[in-house]
Image 1 (cartoon, rainbow, N blue to C red):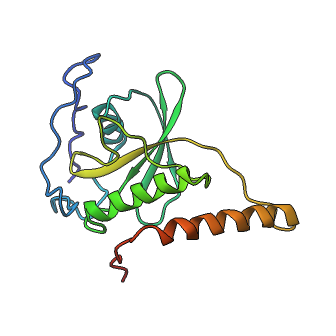
Image 2 (tube, helix red, strand yellow):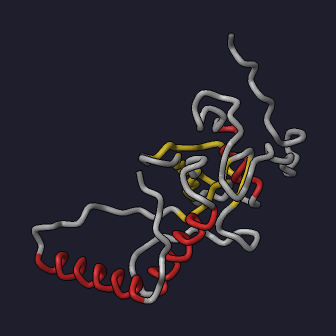
Length: 178
């Protein structure tokens, strides 16, 4: 049977107060098992409401981006800026592991490695909405490197060295990879 469309979670048109999220266990990043697929409830309305829950207002334009494990969307904000929302696969990583990834991306940026760490919004980089953990990052364009150009290879080698240097001074925990 077809499910009825869920109402938009903002109280009234023009009301910018998000309603409360679906309860879940924030320590395990687990969504209640009420659908056959982990992302079945991650509709465009839920994505836009998640954005609003951290004080950013999308203009309705969303683009799904390629990702193997997670769901990633580019959203256009009301002022025309673009951000990327990353919704973490429920049950795949703990919140501590996700926060470790966020901290490492910030360390890479501090070491002048061209990484894009998540934004700190409302004092945090990891947020929860409607049973999903997510982060928001600024959108950055890019292009594939020209690997037949020796200067590009040198540049790439310098950044790989910086990444390894950052790893020397951090103690990442082992991840459960199956």
